[in-house]
Length: 194
Image 1 (cartoon, one colour):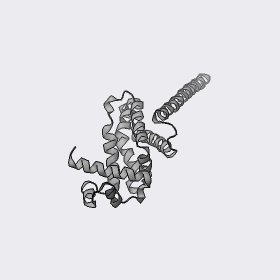
Image 2: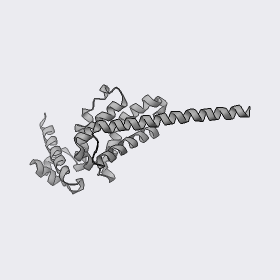
Image 3: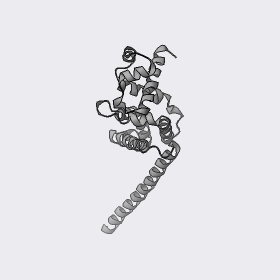
Image 4: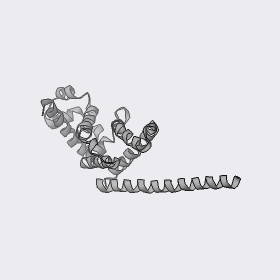
């Protein structure tokens, strides 16, 4: 591992440790540096601010370890994402509280958009990859994750994803049933008119 990565990982470990004890907005760059025995100059050599460090942690510990080609279904990807959030839940719960200009939610949203767009394409085809659908699924997924985190992750990641699948399949069944009923109703109206 390069010296640069050793420094970045030490700063990341320090921030993660601090975020277990106190809210992100109460943590200073000095606190982070003190936690790993480094100086502020080292911090600013690698990161522009503490928000940049949080994003690096997500990118390095999370996104870079996802093996997109190994997923058979979109649920495999969701399961992997949820497992990673679950493993480091206190850090991510605290990270999602970062809002405003440096919102962690916005950073995660933009990071997962390409993955979600790929799965939306499998559902709707190339013409269906509209911004609305991608945004809808990203928001729905992230809102569920944030609620799960904020409620203390009462279920483990496997159970959580199973519940998401159950809810989605149940909704899909109702939508299909309603679609069939609407088509039948339209056909009956046309038949009565003729």
